[in-house]
Amino acid sequence: MERAFSRRYFLGTAAAAAVLGSHTAQAAPPTESLRPVQRGEAFFKRAARSVEDILGEAKLAGNVSFAVSDAATGKTLETHDAAIARPPASVTKAITALYALDALGAGHRFETRLLATGGVVNGEIGGDLVLVGGGDPTLDTDTLALMAANLKAAGIIGVKGGFKVYEASLPVISRIDPEQPDQVGYNPGVSGIALNYNRVHFEWRRASGNYTVTMEGRSDKYRPAVTMAVMQIRDRAAPVYTYEDKAGIDAWSVARGALGGSGSRWLPVRKPGLYAGEVFQTLAGAHGIRLSAPKIVDVVPEAEILVRQESEDLRSILRDMLKWSTNLTAEMMGLAASAAHGPVPVSLKASASQMNIWARANLGMTGPALVDHSGLGDDSRLTANDMVAALVHARNEGLRDILKPVKMRDEKRKVVDDHPIKVDAKTGTLNFVSALAGYLTGPDGTEMAFAIFAADQDIRAKLTRAEREGPPGSDSWNIRAKRMQQHLIERWGVLYGA
Image (cartoon, rainbow, N blue to C red; front, side, top):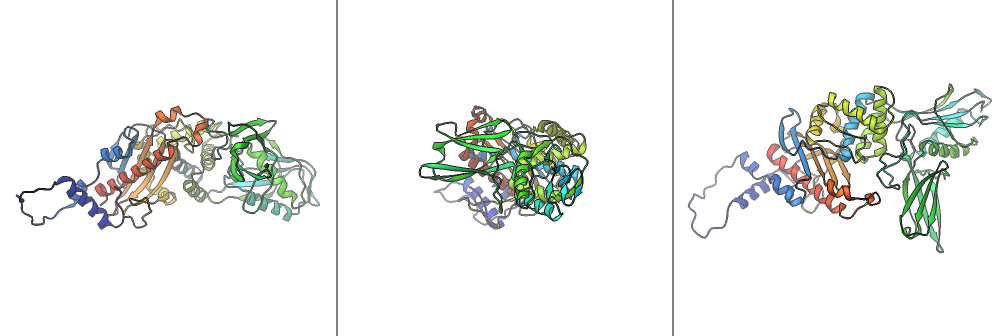
């Protein structure tokens, strides 16, 4: 049973549970005095639910690891299989955030630029216009529109040469995790330029039995159509979606029977540079600046800077990343951090390996084995002991301030705003994987660092690639795991923070 509301309720319920659990009804007269006896703090601690009871109720026994420590002293308070490495899922992003802050600094801003080669005469660029990506994961169509307007304001009216896009400030990777289904928007391509989190908006409308489809770089204000991603409707039962890299185009198809009426979804972009370039070409054209089709270049030429566009500061970007768990942001931030330490890494795995080395040297971790910066990859492993060690080391680095508050809930799963335990943490969810790690403050103000990793890897191993978007049983498994997480946190509140 979940315990919530005030501290009095929190402790009182625990005490009542202890009394009810240790006395049975008696028909004979009492043999001991009925005079009230003062009960100390130890009485309430004995009322805490056992780990066996919590795991048994969740039906997750054998698949759970956890650790909790005093955040100020690092003293271990309780562990369970804490040395067993399990998939951390998006809890990985908390490590990535610390890595990026250390390498780049909280105030770092990413810069996207427009350059001109060949000089500018009477508003006309003598050579090429070059869009240079600087690793900003938050660039969107509205921001590109602002850059196009600023280009016009700088007096540019035309370009004699071509329109080029540079995206190689970070490795160019077609997808974060090759094992994910083609169509999931959280698994896009990665490069030094990103637009709309490298997702294209696919929309379909049905009229008179026929469908019309659009593929757009949509934002709040603009809906520029793109041709670098195309969709065809096919008369088939399965698969629902197919993807093919066809002559430099993201070529998609969808099963007609899966569409129903009208609808939309975001699809991943595999060619970020061409996507951003085509959208900018359209936006510049709206200002009368005609550009040729974008072409990718491997080096930044000697050129004049016409427009600079800065991102928000890194700390703000990371706060949003941890709140919304954006995989692309995590990968770009991790790659940028690795590049700041040395040569640009050639792959996500190589970059994650650099982060593992850094984490051992700076966070007190002993064996992190992460394969990317987002936690999406199946092969990442982390122990609860290592995660808690990192949280203790980072206590004074401001990590808790950018973690998302996690609401505690009552028996009916309703949020309890005045719950006596306060939690700031990073969640992590994959199919049959649920992780939670961060900080909790008990009713008496004691701050603890904790990590809970649950994963049924036997079930995950049986999933086909197509099943990974939503396999049967995954939702109910996840609900049980989240209830278990709250019950463990409540246990720690009674034992160590009440």
